[in-house]
Length: 568
Image (cartoon, rainbow, N blue to C red):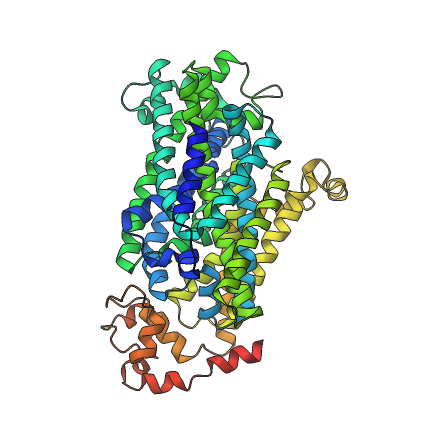
């Protein structure tokens, strides 16, 4: 069954293989709202959601709910503030938006490198999930499973690009949600836990799961819970592989509706994960032994609690294989989105926009595919000895996205006076805060000299870990990044009038064509047909310039190109 599923992914990748960069990066902007919603769901529901969320709830109890709250709430922020506006801006990649909005190749390069780093950290968690579930399906050892499944993922991505990845994601969503819900209902029904609504009925068994599962803040402080949830919310809005999905649709209306569909598809799984965690915890305590304590459930067992629960419930082997197949589909779908985002950052944003502006489509495709293969090899290597649980690994990527990219997306779309200097200062500040948190709290477990410096506390500077925990550094860090960006923008020259008009066009009620962007509208008529929406998006005082009919002339005499050359 699982072998057939993997061959299907390869077949779809071959059938929708790409020959030009439009199909490779944005699927020709041809994806509909339901299909894009399913792709968002599959893209989003990684091994961290399918396996890691239930694992964190099972092992950390109440603290694990921060992941349900954070990942779900983030999509509402995305729907209201970013989805349609990003589509109207109309670029190929998230770093493309940063580079053009702030008229800076340096900002583009920082965003591209951040995108690749997010893809790497996030994908290590997915590869760990693939390896652990692969053991249940094929019976091999962990290392062999990681190498085999990552090779299949990289193989079909190198062929298909965004177009084939999107077609595959729709199929992968169906597989993973059917497998997850079927597993939950089967375990609940056969073990007498639930009947028709396990998402609610599991509440009746909370008293027998132990205080570690049900009592708030036994495994983490109140501040850590808030910090984790906040980082996941803003991180959701800063993930490049999620935001790029809005560039694959034909219009801003389709972008909004695909977000609504995506949220619906995601909630189907998120409302079910706590029930699966409760069933798995009780089955483990009954059939294996203590769940908590020194001899309790291991991290590896927790990461496959969904599959383990099906096995402990004595469900047929083929059914356990179906549940495991859902986990593999989830991990592959998200890895596909991450690798496409990273390869487009390398090929489009760094190679084509900075290194070789005259690059042919063939050269861009070659660099993009080489990035997918190289990143795949690196992720596979690190996944052989990963530094944390699946859910924790993914959370580090969310902190990075929330600290570096989310402030740029939000301010770039909602405050037209955000300028190049402010963006560079803000992104640099975010990177420093995140890097310091990882070095302070995560690396001491793997680097001897740092471990000696950290001692028993586990952190080199405990006070810094308390304020900026690696898993939730965005709570204290993101407001600092906002403040630095705004302060530096106020202290330096305003952006060009052309860029301000483009920002206003991102909020215009006037529809645009499938291949049209806000920049195209401004270049055509100066952005003078926005129906008065300018006032909503701007701080006033400069709107007259956009509606006085003199826009085109000012656009052509703008200083933007000169500024870019000066910076370069």
